Length: 399
Image (cartoon, rainbow, N blue to C red; front, side):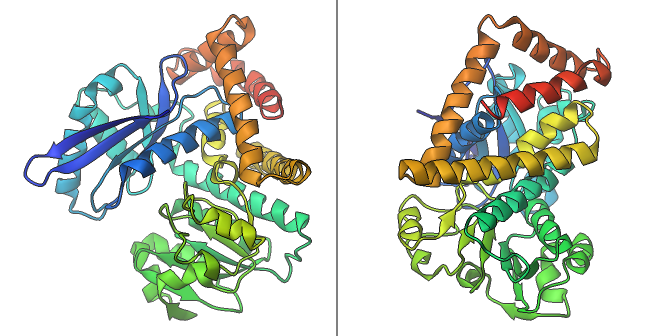
């Protein structure tokens, strides 16, 4: 059961910040820090649980957590730094002991994390060798794409004729969109916090990304092609694949009966409420669990730390997630359960096995993780870690 810590980070407004810890491995837990206006405590515990399942599914012995500040991420920079400093001070016992290790998430950047840590006197470990947080969204987008393709093949969906809608056009959504677009699969709609754009013939994702890099979330209003639509319409569009890659709770009981997609491959965590998922299942919509479809971020960054070549990381992510999604769906059909139930069983088994391995007497595993920690600190070169890391993940990801 998750532990939820709630702190007041502004006495005048009673602004709340949260740290939810779902699991601990070797005294540590990992998870993103998000800034978003609507962060109910129940969501924070769900997000922390997803991190445990995500780590477990890919076989990484990492505890799961999630932190959040209930505020507008587009606030003035000075205000944002003030809140990050106050939040860092409130969590100082967890941060200085490394019991909780934060990462970027919705509404935060690597610079935000570095500032928060430096404000309490910690060196920014995010500058460790091989660790590039800007790639987290890129890797997540790869597995969102690969999961959707595997699901499409399972239901005999012709991808040459398929259409895709992507909610959210940040690092994850843009990465997934580019993957579909590069494979000649029509991306007909995208959204940001400022609205949405739709074109049945397919959007030029390359041009959209270029414009987004210049104007941010206003890309949907400044792009001169396609039709402007309300962002709430995206989830109900008549498309084959829907990828929610923005905030949580995109699909609720209020709109679940109007979802038209055959496949949902999430880039966001907890994009579907617990009450809405049974409605989708009853309507025979294939829902890939969030911790499966968007596991590429944690897995890709782990591989990046070991200095694997970028092409090798991308190939590993695509091949492994495609195989794993197919196995999850087939297992669910055999056992007459939902894909989430099937995937959660797999994730929990792998998590417990990985946790026992690194915390127990398995010398090889403990030695590998000790070597990885030395590499992160710059003590040993990557050539001593990379070969072992690849073999380790191939084993853990299939057990």
